[in-house]
Length: 195
Image 1 (cartoon, rainbow, N blue to C red):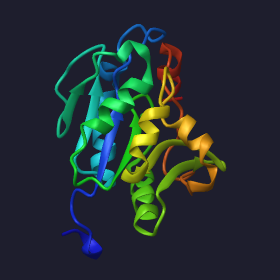
Image 2: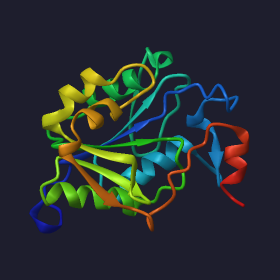
Image 3: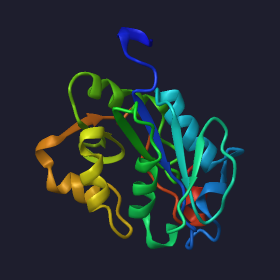
Image 4: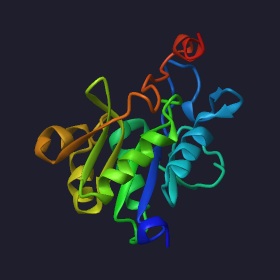
Protein backbone atom coordinates (compact mmCIF):
# COMPACT_ATOMS: atom_id res chain seq x y z
CA UNK A 1 0.00 0.00 0.00
CA UNK A 2 1.13 3.52 -0.65
CA UNK A 3 0.53 6.59 1.48
CA UNK A 4 -3.09 7.19 2.29
CA UNK A 5 -4.01 3.54 1.69
CA UNK A 6 -3.79 3.83 -2.11
CA UNK A 7 -2.88 0.62 -3.91
CA UNK A 8 0.49 0.65 -5.66
CA UNK A 9 -0.10 0.51 -9.38
CA UNK A 10 -3.52 2.11 -9.61
CA UNK A 11 -2.19 5.00 -11.72
CA UNK A 12 -0.01 3.90 -14.62
CA UNK A 13 2.09 5.99 -16.94
CA UNK A 14 2.10 6.03 -20.75
CA UNK A 15 4.97 7.73 -22.55
CA UNK A 16 4.46 8.35 -26.26
CA UNK A 17 7.89 8.02 -27.91
CA UNK A 18 7.21 6.35 -31.24
CA UNK A 19 7.74 9.22 -33.68
CA UNK A 20 10.42 9.38 -36.32
CA UNK A 21 11.44 12.96 -35.55
CA UNK A 22 11.44 14.02 -39.21
CA UNK A 23 12.17 17.69 -38.41
CA UNK A 24 14.72 16.70 -35.78
CA UNK A 25 16.57 14.32 -38.09
CA UNK A 26 16.40 11.34 -35.72
CA UNK A 27 13.73 9.51 -33.67
CA UNK A 28 12.97 11.52 -30.55
CA UNK A 29 13.19 8.48 -28.27
CA UNK A 30 16.96 8.31 -28.71
CA UNK A 31 17.75 12.03 -28.72
CA UNK A 32 19.91 12.89 -25.71
CA UNK A 33 19.32 15.80 -23.37
CA UNK A 34 21.75 16.33 -20.51
CA UNK A 35 23.23 12.88 -21.13
CA UNK A 36 19.93 11.01 -21.02
CA UNK A 37 17.80 9.74 -23.89
CA UNK A 38 14.37 11.38 -24.08
CA UNK A 39 12.65 7.97 -23.74
CA UNK A 40 14.53 7.24 -20.50
CA UNK A 41 13.95 10.76 -19.20
CA UNK A 42 10.22 10.58 -19.90
CA UNK A 43 9.89 7.16 -18.26
CA UNK A 44 11.74 8.46 -15.22
CA UNK A 45 9.44 11.51 -15.09
CA UNK A 46 6.38 9.26 -14.87
CA UNK A 47 7.91 6.83 -12.36
CA UNK A 48 9.24 9.55 -10.05
CA UNK A 49 5.88 11.31 -10.26
CA UNK A 50 4.16 8.20 -8.86
CA UNK A 51 3.10 6.11 -11.88
CA UNK A 52 3.44 2.34 -11.89
CA UNK A 53 3.86 0.61 -14.21
CA UNK A 54 5.25 2.88 -16.91
CA UNK A 55 4.56 1.88 -20.53
CA UNK A 56 6.71 3.43 -23.25
CA UNK A 57 5.30 3.26 -26.77
CA UNK A 58 8.03 3.02 -29.40
CA UNK A 59 7.88 2.71 -33.16
CA UNK A 60 10.47 4.38 -35.38
CA UNK A 61 13.22 2.90 -33.24
CA UNK A 62 13.07 0.10 -30.67
CA UNK A 63 15.29 0.47 -27.63
CA UNK A 64 15.15 -0.84 -24.07
CA UNK A 65 13.98 1.77 -21.58
CA UNK A 66 15.10 1.54 -17.97
CA UNK A 67 12.33 0.73 -15.51
CA UNK A 68 9.59 0.58 -18.14
CA UNK A 69 7.54 -1.81 -20.22
CA UNK A 70 8.15 -1.11 -23.90
CA UNK A 71 5.47 -1.60 -26.52
CA UNK A 72 5.98 -1.41 -30.27
CA UNK A 73 3.37 0.46 -32.28
CA UNK A 74 3.68 -0.96 -35.81
CA UNK A 75 1.44 1.85 -37.05
CA UNK A 76 3.57 4.63 -35.54
CA UNK A 77 3.87 6.45 -38.87
CA UNK A 78 0.12 7.16 -38.83
CA UNK A 79 0.64 9.52 -35.90
CA UNK A 80 0.20 9.91 -32.18
CA UNK A 81 -3.36 8.55 -32.11
CA UNK A 82 -2.30 4.97 -32.86
CA UNK A 83 0.47 5.20 -30.25
CA UNK A 84 -1.97 6.36 -27.60
CA UNK A 85 -4.26 3.43 -28.41
CA UNK A 86 -1.32 1.01 -28.21
CA UNK A 87 -0.27 2.43 -24.83
CA UNK A 88 -3.76 2.23 -23.33
CA UNK A 89 -4.18 -1.36 -24.58
CA UNK A 90 -0.93 -2.35 -22.87
CA UNK A 91 -1.99 -1.20 -19.41
CA UNK A 92 -2.76 -3.79 -16.75
CA UNK A 93 -6.33 -4.21 -15.55
CA UNK A 94 -5.30 -2.87 -12.15
CA UNK A 95 -4.65 0.59 -13.60
CA UNK A 96 -7.56 2.83 -12.62
CA UNK A 97 -6.07 5.77 -14.50
CA UNK A 98 -3.10 6.67 -16.67
CA UNK A 99 -0.91 9.73 -16.93
CA UNK A 100 -0.03 10.29 -20.58
CA UNK A 101 3.18 12.17 -21.35
CA UNK A 102 5.20 12.97 -24.47
CA UNK A 103 8.88 12.12 -24.83
CA UNK A 104 9.63 15.44 -26.49
CA UNK A 105 8.91 17.62 -23.44
CA UNK A 106 12.01 17.04 -21.30
CA UNK A 107 11.62 20.08 -19.04
CA UNK A 108 8.47 18.82 -17.30
CA UNK A 109 9.26 17.68 -13.75
CA UNK A 110 7.83 14.82 -11.67
CA UNK A 111 5.87 17.29 -9.52
CA UNK A 112 3.49 17.87 -12.44
CA UNK A 113 2.73 14.14 -12.64
CA UNK A 114 2.29 13.93 -8.87
CA UNK A 115 -0.23 16.81 -8.96
CA UNK A 116 -2.31 15.07 -11.62
CA UNK A 117 -2.38 11.89 -9.53
CA UNK A 118 -3.38 13.92 -6.45
CA UNK A 119 -6.24 15.45 -8.46
CA UNK A 120 -7.39 11.94 -9.43
CA UNK A 121 -7.32 10.87 -5.79
CA UNK A 122 -9.60 13.79 -4.93
CA UNK A 123 -12.15 12.93 -7.61
CA UNK A 124 -10.95 14.22 -11.00
CA UNK A 125 -11.39 11.71 -13.84
CA UNK A 126 -9.59 13.94 -16.36
CA UNK A 127 -6.74 16.13 -15.12
CA UNK A 128 -4.62 18.32 -17.39
CA UNK A 129 -1.37 20.08 -16.47
CA UNK A 130 -1.81 23.82 -17.03
CA UNK A 131 0.87 26.42 -17.64
CA UNK A 132 -0.24 30.04 -17.61
CA UNK A 133 -3.81 28.76 -17.35
CA UNK A 134 -3.54 26.81 -20.61
CA UNK A 135 -3.89 23.02 -20.62
CA UNK A 136 -0.91 21.15 -22.09
CA UNK A 137 0.78 17.88 -21.10
CA UNK A 138 0.91 15.59 -19.23
CA UNK A 139 -2.73 14.51 -18.99
CA UNK A 140 -4.39 12.03 -16.62
CA UNK A 141 -7.33 9.98 -17.89
CA UNK A 142 -9.37 7.64 -15.68
CA UNK A 143 -10.05 4.14 -17.00
CA UNK A 144 -13.74 4.85 -17.49
CA UNK A 145 -12.74 7.16 -20.37
CA UNK A 146 -10.08 4.95 -22.02
CA UNK A 147 -12.39 3.53 -24.68
CA UNK A 148 -13.65 6.91 -25.88
CA UNK A 149 -10.19 8.46 -25.75
CA UNK A 150 -8.89 5.60 -27.93
CA UNK A 151 -11.81 5.88 -30.33
CA UNK A 152 -11.33 9.61 -30.87
CA UNK A 153 -7.52 9.51 -31.14
CA UNK A 154 -6.79 9.66 -34.86
CA UNK A 155 -3.88 10.82 -36.95
CA UNK A 156 -1.37 13.00 -35.16
CA UNK A 157 -3.56 13.89 -32.21
CA UNK A 158 -3.77 12.03 -28.94
CA UNK A 159 -6.31 12.84 -26.23
CA UNK A 160 -7.09 16.32 -27.59
CA UNK A 161 -10.35 15.39 -29.41
CA UNK A 162 -11.68 13.76 -26.24
CA UNK A 163 -10.71 16.77 -24.13
CA UNK A 164 -12.42 19.15 -26.56
CA UNK A 165 -15.54 16.98 -26.63
CA UNK A 166 -15.80 16.91 -22.83
CA UNK A 167 -14.63 20.23 -21.36
CA UNK A 168 -16.95 19.63 -18.40
CA UNK A 169 -14.77 16.71 -17.29
CA UNK A 170 -11.46 18.56 -17.41
CA UNK A 171 -9.75 19.64 -14.20
CA UNK A 172 -6.89 22.04 -14.95
CA UNK A 173 -4.01 21.52 -12.55
CA UNK A 174 -1.61 24.49 -12.24
CA UNK A 175 1.94 23.36 -12.99
CA UNK A 176 3.75 26.63 -13.77
CA UNK A 177 6.35 25.88 -11.10
CA UNK A 178 6.64 22.19 -12.08
CA UNK A 179 8.47 22.54 -15.36
CA UNK A 180 8.11 23.93 -18.84
CA UNK A 181 6.01 22.24 -21.55
CA UNK A 182 8.36 23.35 -24.37
CA UNK A 183 8.65 20.55 -26.90
CA UNK A 184 11.55 19.45 -29.05
CA UNK A 185 10.70 19.31 -32.75
CA UNK A 186 13.89 20.68 -34.32
CA UNK A 187 17.63 20.81 -33.53
CA UNK A 188 17.12 24.50 -32.67
CA UNK A 189 14.45 23.54 -30.12
CA UNK A 190 16.91 21.16 -28.47
CA UNK A 191 19.64 23.78 -28.31
CA UNK A 192 17.26 26.39 -26.90
CA UNK A 193 16.37 24.23 -23.88
CA UNK A 194 19.59 25.37 -22.19
CA UNK A 195 19.98 29.11 -22.85
